[in-house]
Image 1 (cartoon, rainbow, N blue to C red):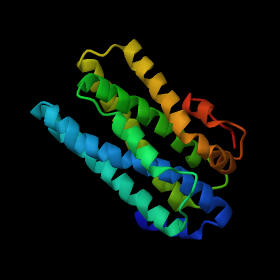
Image 2 (image 1 turned 90 degrees about the vertical axis):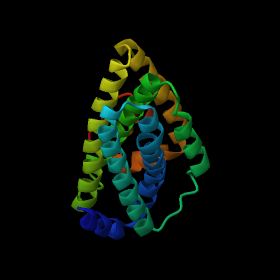
Image 3 (image 1 turned 120 degrees about the horizontal axis):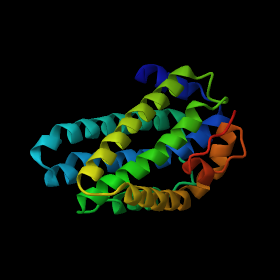
Image 4 (image 1 turned 60 degrees about the vertical axis):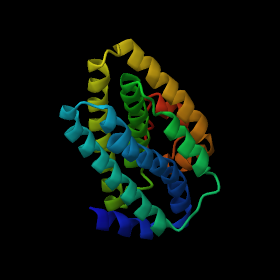
Length: 207
């Protein structure tokens, strides 16, 4: 999968490579932050019976970050639209010593990421690049599983479903502010007028 995905990234024409690079720059900051969260912050504060699950999720995020970096290297673009330091600060601010809140934030963030990835997986513009789309779909599949696990942990720790929803809404609003510069890139790749805010809210474009 990785080899085909990377080969497809090389084949992307410039009018697709640049907008995809913009979106991937946002995503890679999230994957790197999640690797740290699952592999360090949460494990240290979690009971031993959760360690294996959290470590597995951290490994997923490491693979995602590695693959996205491979794509970015092949795309050959350093998008000016992305402030990587601002992105890193956003993702690092999601961490908290309140484990229930931390898991709730992860669930909210990963839900939004899944929605963004779904748009790319369904993109007619990217459809000819099957290896790349397969790689994006694999990341989305892992993130769907992370959402389920994180929600379960948050509920086990006393977070109510209403609280989970409120946290997700807050994350969605913050992510929308962060990703506004990526609006034109998302529109170009999806071929639709669907704004990022509506995507994060769960609406889907038809391409």
